[in-house]
Length: 201
Image (cartoon, rainbow, N blue to C red):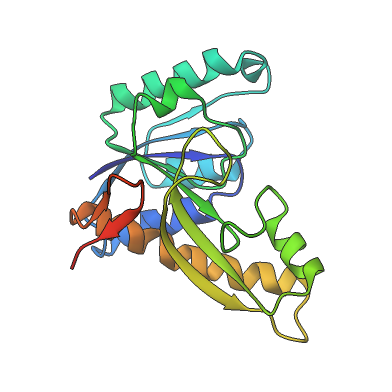
């Protein structure tokens, strides 16, 4: 499976995928990493792993359609079959969605549909929930609303802070994302007519 990865920051989930491929637990290849920020540390991770990179900047995003057209073009040229959003903080639009229909994955640090948006860990903590978690889903035109592929819960302990809760959630992300990619690589993930994800044995 040829994978394109979109990042905006440190790239810790990118690193988890790189590691899974390197150790042989994921049959795939990251063909390109594109960052919405030229200073994202994830670009360093990609370069150290020998993965081609491309960085955009805030000026490009003044025209979102042009930025997304560039993203779709770069990934197509690289031969990507699936796109993985790994901490990518910009909205993807039809230019990318139509180029990779039902082949764009997003990771969200909560159990969707609960706590959508960019402050999910803080929001869950402030709400006082006892359980939150991680969701991997197919991306669509609406934030955090595409078909859910997998979820994993994370307990919120009495002595947790936002920081310790974030650490626990990130640890789950780093195992769940490669696990979902393994299922996709094995041809076990499909979307039925009702737009629900089915996972075969």
